[in-house]
Image (cartoon, rainbow, N blue to C red):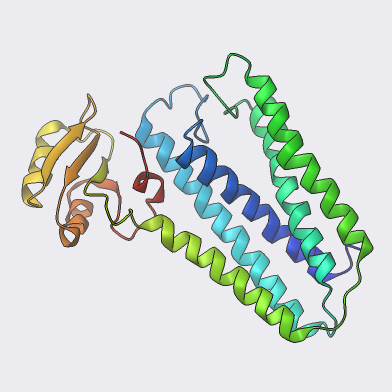
Length: 252
């Protein structure tokens, strides 16, 4: 089974998709935890979200490698096997959650699935089974069945859809919803309130909310002025077209 490039590279892509599912749903939408929520000394929300960004960047890299491998297989292998590819995607998806559960939750202890739960182990086990073991076993059985007729056109369409979906998800995460009037700005560590107010004034923004240290602020600002914050001490600015997707949907 693993001699097929469709299985190998499909597993790589599925692994990245599992990471995206975890990060987008648990880190951003539900906000149950961040990547390093339980690491001592990293209580600053700026550092937490920054490391979430590094995590998503790594998943993009792994997804790109998987897509590259599948694209090569499409041109080099005369026969493509749809069941093997679908099974490999499920294997990779489940494998991510198994690795994350064992390594991140129980060995390293850097986060848990639901931090505010009175029984976090129960949530860990539910997630491990539902999104780890079930897809892993289902994908393994599907990939072992193999089969599939030569379908170069179908493979091209599938690869195009996967590529477009991955790229589209990334582009979607970069921009806030159209009815969102606010912009979240995270300033680098050690940036004082005077510098923050100077940056707000320089971009003609209006302060709406700020944390106690003025390290994270929410402002209203013209879309074409958001870029100005990057030249005035900002690490991340939502809606500015740089990988700050974690802030585009954040609850303040």
